Length: 348
Image 1 (tube, rainbow, N blue to C red):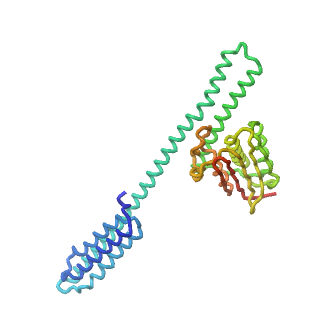
Image 2: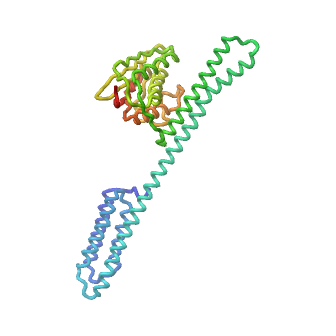
Image 3: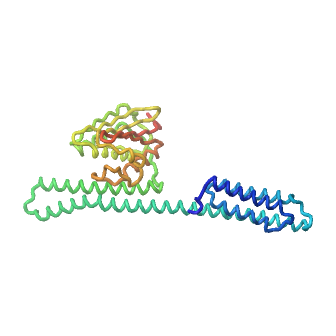
């Protein structure tokens, strides 16, 4: 962008030009209107100064120098009204040029911001399409395969086989439903259209229930849950908090090895209810941590695992709506700890 040529050096060059024009102005015995208009040149040059304050200073200096030039030298031969009119016209021209430059720079900045947003939206859309096409393919393939086997073996299939295949189909449907819910939540979060339905929530019981349900789904992972330090009833949205803790726990289980331990702890710290989910899994690369809560972003070492990349973004959004925060502490190859801080509003 032309307006970004920048710098204090350019500003100094402009001021030097202004001083040179002023010296020429006062050294001229006759006040020619063209001399006043010479000050528009450094004003035009201010377009290349990135800092808008410096642009205004350039215009201000030109105006001051034109005014000083009214008295040095004092007009003798020229008619005073004409002299004054020329100077006023010069000042008006400099100010108008300065305003036009300022408007132009603002328009360029607005366009640059809009372009950056458009590029980001396009990148997000591509990531979304890629994610959906990949994540939906696996459960749909499983559903199709199981349904096909049931049709082909309908005369010899037994109750146990029907139960097993039915469970496989239901699990795949559940994954698709969770994926759709995540995408819908993500869309609503980006549009700031999620509304809290606050009510009395037993936080201790809610976290315990999430742990028990996740343990039943993934028996090959051990989940140790100690939330005795949490408060009882708080004012919150139970559905949103259920999503928060289920997502964090599902991630901890997914990225941990078989028979590894996932620890869930609850306590009260400085007026906040703190729930931490700790795993001893593969950890998160340090370079990925700053972007971890962005929509559709996935850590560079998570490509071998299924996922949509919206879960943590939704988690942070839901927790923020409650006035809380989410932190992460991770070491590559050693595991991660996600901690949710919730203000204890309406605690009983």
